[in-house]
Length: 120
Image (cartoon, rainbow, N blue to C red):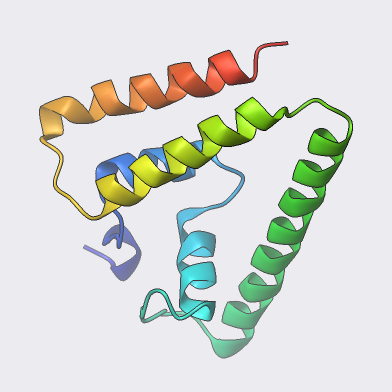
């Protein structure tokens, strides 16, 4: 098994990352840069810092997107509350063990809530 095949995340977090704008590697780099995860990367220093830059630009774009969507009333205060509550639950899930047979149920609930919140 290669180093990249080993994950710092449980299955639920990995599935959520796959649906996000970021790759698992980029999330690891962001966590590493914020001293929230100590991880070894088997890439060159130049490649690592290139990915740091890409991750930073994606994060900046995400924040600008949130600002414009919130500012134009597309994302409402209730939507922010839903996102906050889901984020809190993800924090709990990240720190606990979830039975493998329940993982799809958890993802389905999260997906359903997000889709309801984003209905146009």
